[in-house]
Length: 356
Image 1 (cartoon, rainbow, N blue to C red):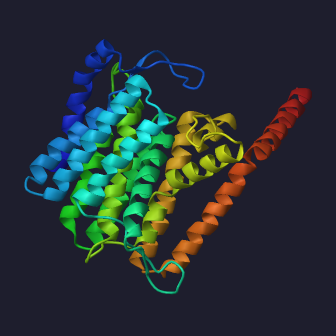
Image 2: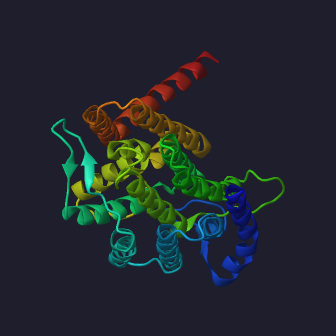
Image 3: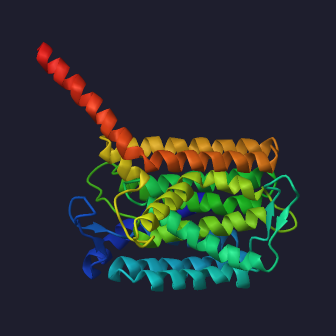
């Protein structure tokens, strides 16, 4: 029942918020980096949060941890709206994200302490350093999903894949109440995707998620991963988390490395993300969305399979590192490969034209 409430609340909130966004100027206007038609309302994140908030208040009326999650979520959505509206400085955004993330660490008392047996030498425990590591993970998760929001449907599709993967891991361990939270968020994202991808009948106007939405998703992911991997009865191992957020995590790490290597700020916006590379290679945005989403689902499937069959953590970690190295190498040399492919295509077209 709470899942339908989440979906319907988001669905109702979107048309209600649209005229408000137009009136106050909470819209995304095309520019050299953002290529779309007209001013698009940035209300997806607010609507997703409202759907999650309503369903959680009904499903978990007395859960103090969920209450703290909703407080931190409300703050991150507010920060995102301010960033959408005023384009806040990077430093202010990061400090604000850390303060909001501290609710997870110091409010709920949950942080990443046990990283598992990643090197076949026993479990790695961080002790007091776990709080610092968790705060870094908060920044990483929030900004990783924020960076995926570059083509229609991508951030939402990756979010649904991640939340349903987390829910599956909770469910397999019999933690049905914990499994409900990620499903609620996933159902809240569905109506946004319908509007964002123009899948509704009629002339429903497109909306964007905005920083409010992508930040909310990233914060929600790190909350759920921390709850799932830590404590006396963890639902899954930390290494599994790497696989279910592999695409956003690898894309963020690779592009930040490239920016630093060029002497640029790691947070400087550009058009070198994975989805941009697909488009420059001549692949249509909707096809790029499908390819990247399928890749994310495949990697999540590997993580779920490894968890279900209890594949040794060091093997899963080594596999992820190999994947990341291969991904980084390909991305670093992708433009050479794209030029080669385009050269072959031009040669084929020229050969076909000459035959005609």
